[in-house]
Image (cartoon, rainbow, N blue to C red; front, side):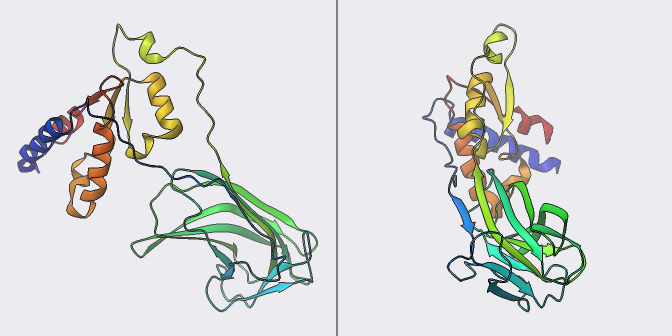
Length: 274
């Protein structure tokens, strides 16, 4: 590992030459999604919902409804994780927060059980899972709202939300699903800036990632900080060939911050990893 230190030093020095702090600022665009996605089955179709495993039966029905005329009934479940699923890839953006909610009710004759809402996120063929709404008791007597806030923290190339049970194979209805974008709260601007309060003493620094150079994160940086350092974009493990393009975008965005706004620090890479 010590033999690689000269290469790391050279890399950092080259960046100080080719990405000077006074270049025009560039930013990584952060896409947001502000629409509300609703499925209420009122057109008589499943509106994109599909069997999660493949052997469940999804039926749009009038037998039980929360509102309107139709709901979606799932039967024939062979696993606890079997249930209705909806593709939300492109509807949920990394770093944004959303409210996910759906009403649920068990089919007539089913005993009370626990249902939950989960998300499967996939990148490069590897699946990971997030519990959005934890196990919640649902009965055949009344509709129960399953609702929680969710933030996608990872890059994905596939994203599904689905309803499953904790253990049993009960049949159940869902109705009035909603996915709602939650805009971030603005920063407080009627207070002194830390960088100004301590300007005669020391710099106020922050470790930042490329996706924190826009929006409310950038507003907070501008308000209180005058020194920044790369969080992960310039660490040695980020410099492997398979990640080089993402690293270049991250470092270019970081060094694009204007000199009058921030002092760029690179000592983390020169000292910590040697």
